[in-house]
Amino acid sequence: MKQTLCKPCAMELASRGKVLKPLEFRAEKITCAACGRRRYGVQYEVLSRARRETIKAAVLLSGWLVIAVTAEAWATPISQAITPDWLKRPPADLVVAVPADPIPIIQVTAPLPEPSEASNEDALIEAALLEQGYYSDEIPLDYLYQDILRTACEQYGVPYALALAVIETESGFDLEAVGADGRDVGLFQIRTSNHAWLSEETGADPAAPAGNIVCGVWLLGHLLGEYGNAESALTAYRWGQDNGSRDYARTVLAAAERWAERTGLKNG
Image (cartoon, rainbow, N blue to C red; front, top):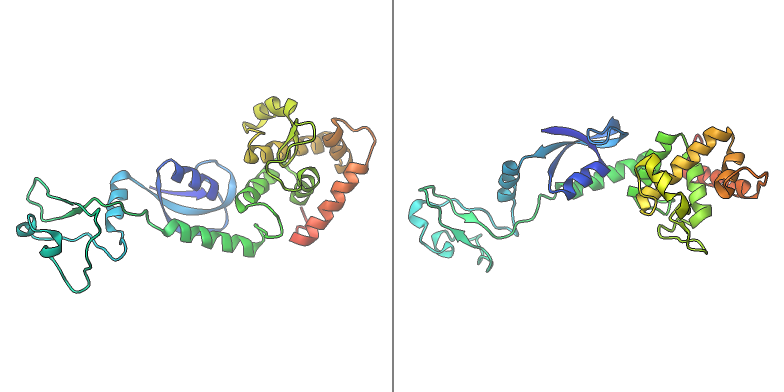
């Protein structure tokens, strides 16, 4: 079965034991078949269990091959059954399973690695997204969190440079930052008293790095929509309401300008 997936969803499926064979990287944004969001992605073949085992059996392991032999060789030790020049001594955990049916195949039950295409495909995707400016080494966040931040900004209508500026001002890009009183946590320094309702609004966990990003961006987007301008919205983000002070807002907006220049995000 073929599916076009964004990288986070592909990683999630892989963590659940699915085997994904990358087919084609899409340089343009796609609609992810798993989450429905518009992101850069890859077309994968999602392999069945049987197909997975077939691929595993075909993987080379340090120069070793699955060897087909004749029925007469079943009872013969593998080192004697076939010993061409290129065949070295087999590892100790290589086990020959003699089949019950007369099928002339030796099954290797030694542990085999998963196909390595995924790691190569990840590197190709990251290189392409770096070249396009989607990721940036100027930003002190892992690419995964950059992707989550960009996606949240697009979803909730928040300029990317502004979100980066809020993170820099609030936490200095420290994923595990905790405020002086212990009640402001994460990249966006979200007050613990706001966690429950923000989680209900977004379905994300503000205590986790990814969820903190989603909730923080959602709150920024909500305040921008409510107040209609960045200065008032940022003041409300800092103080809970627009109390007329502009010191925090000016600090964040100056940082946003710097991020726009450093990353080429002139239009958000």
